[in-house]
Structure formats: structure tokens, C-alpha cells
Image 1 (tube, helix red, strand yellow):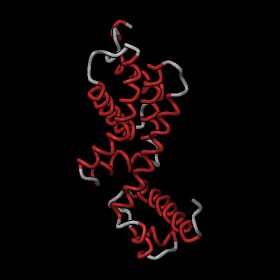
Image 2 (tube, rainbow, N blue to C red; image 1 turned 90 degrees about the horizontal axis):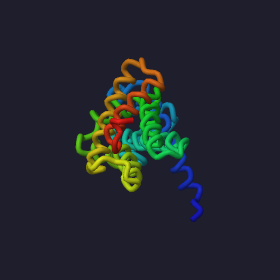
Image 3 (tube, rainbow, N blue to C red; image 1 turned 30 degrees about the vertical axis):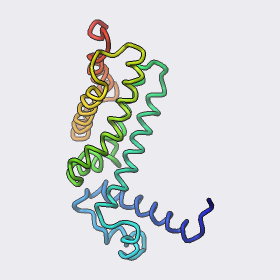
Image 4 (cartoon, rainbow, N blue to C red; image 1 turned 135 degrees about the vertical axis):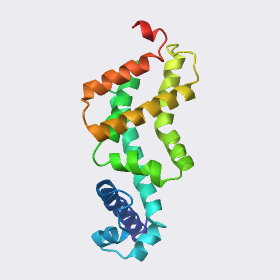
Amino acid sequence: MPKNKKELASIKTTQNLIAIARKHFSKYGYAKTSLEAIVEELAITRGALYHHFKGKKELFLAVLNQVQTEVGANVEKEAMTSEDIWEQLTLGCVGFVEAATLEANRRILLIDAPNVIDWTEWRKIDNENSVALLEEQLLVIQEKGELVALDTRLMAHLISGALNDLSLYQAESDSLTKDAIQDAITYLLKGFRVNGHEG
């Protein structure tokens, strides 16, 4: 249904708020990001911001959702560069680490998100994104009979935990090449493959 000018303007303001807030959260971190600086840059009142978001945490959640969506899109994009189901899993995991450690994402996703958001809420968000994508691919592999006899949800959590920690390590050190990340993930995933230890 076509939106009127007022609705379109509201959507545009929301998008602009998220874009500017993302820049501030990425550069300064959640604690040092000022709502005053965000509204000043956008040339709106603080009241206008509160019309769209209840406060800084809700604005941060909107930014985090955008980051998670982009990371998920990169995982799928990288995975789809191969037709081999195991290589899709590997490349998708590499795609996650690459996207999560981008300068625009790393502080928001890896540092602030687990600290700003209640742990239960953060787990829910992570489960609905990273873990869900992993489990989806593992189920495909399981249907082909190439997965060890473990629960796919369990495996997805194990892999997701390893990828999150690898991403933190890379974000802090920036010492790993893409090939090194792919090699490490390949060895990790081998353990979940039927007869993987033999290959």
C-alpha cells in the first residue's frame, strides 16, 4: 500500500538516525556515544529522536539488527560461491568472521552487544542469526548423510562459539590472513564430518 509523505518522511528519519548512530557507535562505542551529537548531526530535536526510539539502547538495538542482517547476508553470499555443501559451510563461516571484524561492525557486534544487552536477550539475538544460519546448513549436510551423529543445534552452538571467539581474536590482533582463517575453520569443521578425521 502506498505511503503518504508523512510516513515516508518518518521512515527516512528512522533510516538516517540508524545510519548516523551506527557511525557513532562504531567510532566511539556505546558508552561514549552521545544522543545529543547524533541529533545535532541530523539537525533534528531530541524529542524527534524519542518519537522514533525510546532511548539509546533501543537505537543501538536497531543498529545491531542492521549489522546482524548484513553479516548474515555476507555469510550467504560467501557460501553460495560454491556448490559443495561442506565448502558452503566453510566459506559461510569465513564470511562471518570477515564481516564481523569489519571496522564498521566489530565494536558494535563483538564488544558492545554482549555488554549493553541483557545476556539472555543477546543469546536470543545470536541464536536467531548466527546459530540459525549454521543449523540450517548443518541440516542440509545431515540429510546427505555426511554429518556425525550429534544434534545439529548442539553443533551449531559449538561452531558459533568458536567463530565468535575467533572474530574477537582477529579484531584485537588483525594478524590473520583470509587463508589462515579458512584453514583454521576447515580443521575445526572436519571433526563434524563423517570420516572427517581421515580426510
